[in-house]
Each structure stands twice: as structure tokens, then as C-alpha cells.
Image 1 (cartoon, one colour):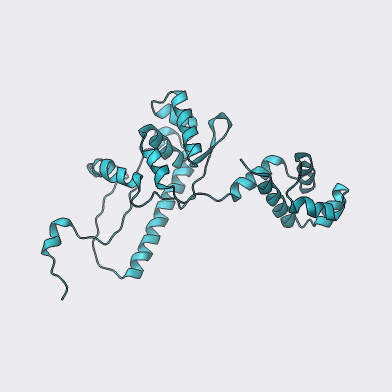
Image 2 (spheres, one colour):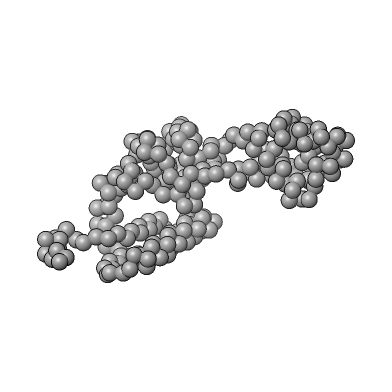
Length: 246
């Protein structure tokens, strides 16, 4: 939930954006300018006064709350303990992945074998873990930044390597929209960083397209998983054949 300080800070930003000074606001509200300054500096403002300021700005409270939510810092990663909590329950992990994909409560319930109490319970857990902010009617706001990633050697990636990699690469990659490429080469370190940035943009494009295509009917969509990786590595079967540098 937003604190009073968050709301007051958002109001100050809106006043500045609208070019409304404290003196102007004091005139609108019939108060002394010093009282206005004190009210904002101490973040001591009842809801009735907030509503009065909003009327001056021609905003409603819902719009202000959205501004506060949009300005809130989002997580770029979870802690080891948080990831472990997610991985420990496969249904919680599934719901977390669905939330990362911005699925609605109704989509999750219709697609997977959850009872309503099971699904709501997992959403509550993700709220407590700071992954989402659960709202009325089982709506939620994702609290993860668009640059979010799982810890490189954390519980989720260890789970992925142990349980998911073999299953993923067992496929033929020969159906519509599928592709598997293996490219090996030697490049400068600066170029390696540049390639990583380009791959990250591809991942972001994929994520944005996923959100844009949510409006398509189910018959026009298929689930895809994009796996990107790049590392300095030599296949284990070849390592003993490599000459040591002189």
C-alpha cells in the first residue's frame, strides 16, 4: 500500500508539472502559504485536503494512486531465500511464471488444474514475497522490473539446469516458429558485451510481443519459450585436446 508520504510526494510532482505554486494553491484553498508549505513538508494532510488539492489539479484519487504505483521502484532480482520459497512449491513456481507473463487470474484458472482456493493462496504467497501486489478481485500488479532476472546461480537457475534443460532440448525444434542454432567463435571482449546487449533486446522484444498478443484469440496463439545464453566455454569432450598456451 502507498504511504501518505508517497501520496504527498506525488501531489508535489503534479503541482510542479501543472505550474501551480504553493501561493497559487493557498489562494485556491483559502489558506496561508506558510500552512501549505508546512502541510507538504510534514506530509500531514487528511484525505479531505488531498481531495481539495486534486480538484485544483483536476485529477481524481485513482489517477494519483496510479502515478504513485508507476513511480514505485521495482525489483530487479529476488533474494536467495525468496527464490527458494518459489522453487520449493511447483504450483507456486507455475503461478509465478504466469504472473511474469502477465496472465490474468481467469487465464490461470482456465488453463491449469487449480482450485480457486489453491490459486488465490499462491497469489497471496507471491504478494508476501514481494513478487506481486495483490488487489481486489484477484487482480495484481507485478512488482518486478522489466530488467528482472533470476539469480545466475540461485535456486531457480539450479532448478532449471537440473529439471528443465534436458526436457527443453529433447525437442526437435522443427515445428512452425521453432529454431535451434549453435554458433561458436572467438570475438573481442568488448564485442561479447555488445552481443549480450543485443540478445537482451531480443528477449525484451519477445516479452513485449507476448503482452501485445494477449488480445488475440487462443486459436491464434501458441506457447513458446525463448532461451538465450552466451558464455566463454569449451565442450567438455574437447577440453583434454586443447594445448596449454606457451
